[in-house]
Length: 213
Image (tube, rainbow, N blue to C red; front, side):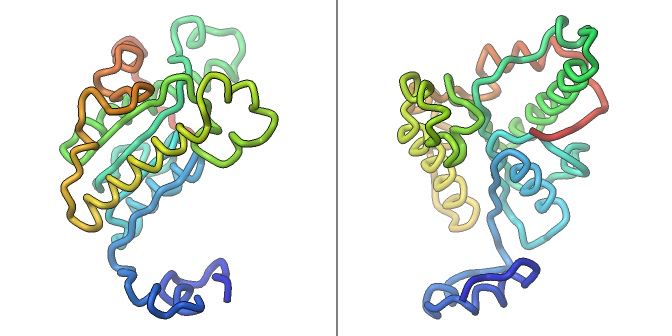
């Protein structure tokens, strides 16, 4: 009894073999998280679907209405450790480099706005790759990164913040981890107090473009 794409969530859950499990689910209050373009999808779902009450974006840019300030739901963002674009990228002769810099610039400014709200949270994991937010990091292609950041530890960090966020906004629990400063994990930086990200959002020119990782 797998769930078929296109079937609404409630009907999909009723196909599962354990009736006690799906009977406990509240499809009027859903938490949505995604990685990369899935993070953009989660954010846009938070704009379009009132059943989505809390959104987590794992290292993704924003698209659509969410990129233009329409997302009003509790929001958690986690970034990998990637370079902030500077004058060299904005003025590059390569149009791809310039456009990527403009998209990153727009995304960083919107990330600052969203994570500065009372129900917004932003973190980055130092020495992490984009793939650290998915199972792809366990592929042998990335084995050299394992010597820098244990992928199991990175996964544990991501899961801890995911659980705390959804426990707070779906179950109403108090979750001090979300505001703990400094964080209990040495690899984690708060987005809005990190010198790396503050410098990026302070010096990059604001643009009207948007995209997604």
